[in-house]
Every structure is written in C-alpha cells, then in structure tokens.
Image 1 (cartoon, helix red, strand yellow):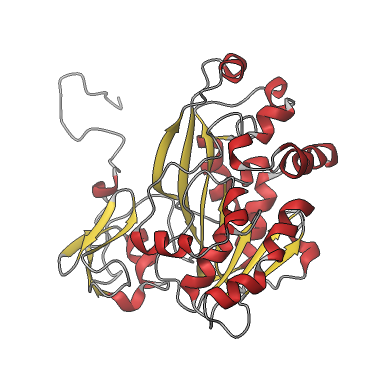
Image 2: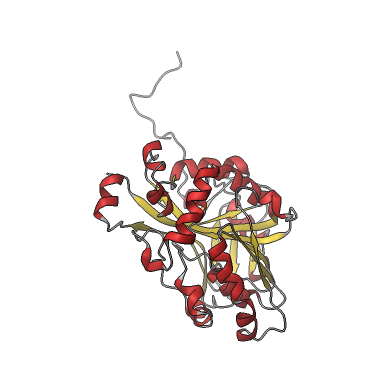
Length: 350
C-alpha cells in the first residue's frame, strides 16, 4: 500500500505538470458544465485549471451554506468552484497527499478570496491520505456533502474510504462523486502497472463490486447520475488493457436511515416546486428521475426519502404515507422474479 501511494504522489507531483501530460483521456472531464458552473470556472486561476485531472463533474445542486469535503482535491479546482456556490457562510475542505498539488491550491487562496468578494476564505486544504481520514481530526457526522473527482480509483482500500465517508456525513448527507469503473475485474498484473494506475485505469472498480461495497458500508441504494464510456486513445495502453471497457460514472450515495435494498411501492408521490437555484423548470435526482415543476410524480419509498430526508425537502410537496405497502416499485426497474401467468408446464408441489 505504501509503495502504491508513493507511486501516485510521484506520478501526480513529478510526472504530470499539466492535464495535457496524461497518456489517456480517463482523467479528463467529458461533461459539458451548466452555465452557472462555467461562470464559476471563469473566476479560477489558470494554474489551478491547468493542473486539473478530474473525470467528471462532481458538483450537485442546492449547495448554499453547506459544509463540504473534497477527497483528493488536487490543485483545488473543484474546491474553488464549490467555494463560490456554498457562499461565504459555507465551508469547503480539500484533502490531498501530493505536495506539489497542495502547493498550487494553497498559493491561490488569497487570490480567490478577493476574486469571489469574500472578506475571509471559506476554503482550506489539508495534507492527508484519503485512506487514513481518521488522522485528520475530522468530526464524524459533520459534513453535508462529500465529493471526489476521479480519485477513489487510486485508493488501494476503497471499502475503507467509503466506510469513513459514511461516518463523516451528517444524517441526510450525501457523497456525490465521479470516478472510473470497469466492466470486469482487473487482473493483479495490470493493477501493478504504475502508469495504468496513475492514469485511473487499473485501479478502477468493477461496477458490481462497487455496488456491493457501497451497500456493505451503509449506502443502501447507490444512484447513477451520469455515465460515459472512456476511449483510451493510446495504442500501447489499449493493448495492455485488452477487452476491458471503462466508464466515467457519477454516483450519489445517501446516508439515510430507512432506505431499502430494493425499490418498494408505498403509493407515494412528490411534486417539485421549481425553487432550487439553476433548476427552475425541472430537477434531476439521478439518471432516471426527472421532476418537472408542478407535476405529481409517483416514486418508490427510497426516492421519497432521498427528497424528504435531505437538503431538498423544502423544494418538494410530498404525497402519501408509509401505511400500506403495494409490492415492488416497477417504475425503478424492479419486478417480481417469477411469472404470475398460469401454464400447462407449471410445477406441481405433489
């Protein structure tokens, strides 16, 4: 583990000096940001932007006043976006273990404080390993939101990272993060390749193992927000990886009591008020839940809780109770694993 951490620090501190030095596009954002994020990006110093190595957009909505932790904050790009979106009453803490990246992030704290019109900075950066968050004196149940952008794949003990995140989040808080996933488990030989690991490929979790691990540590119902296939576009790296397919995926994981491991139907519905900033006409919870303003939408119990027990509660009207269970909620893709149709081939118990 220690050797792998040193390789990562060497790769991101010495080997790479700008995003163009990457050998593949796995650590490159492919998503077009919303207009308000484009505005926030325009206020960030060029050197911070130049040393950005993210694979997605780990910036959800409704951020005003939140306390946020960024795991693997690098040069600080996402922290400085969030600094503007949480406002001066919010707080953003970045954690990274690479001195060169931290030097860039810290160098421009005063620059951004002035640029954003704040009297004091609402951002700070801590040197630390995301696999050893207990060493940073961060209080449990103290963060509204934890983000990460193409970093957890670099961790050797991903289960511990997710378990620690769960402890640090407040009840109703969420982890919203982008990372690289594979369509199969990656061999130990490929995992030992320092370039493939540094390029965010050989450390990628097989997506089904990620779902199992998330549920094991308490994130019962992981929700995919966006996903894109990754094209490597480097012949040597492509040959090493063979037929493995990689994807950049943004997930949101909720710390909510009462979530079930399947989507269940309690006859509930919600109506979006259209009151979330930059989401006036509709709100997307994930890649299969869009809520147009004013329309009553039936939802499963888990989705109901993800809106009612979180920072989104004031922006919805909620219809229904938990009094009656109607079976599996098929609107989320669930269905009974057996047919109710009778046939001549039906098995007999005799």
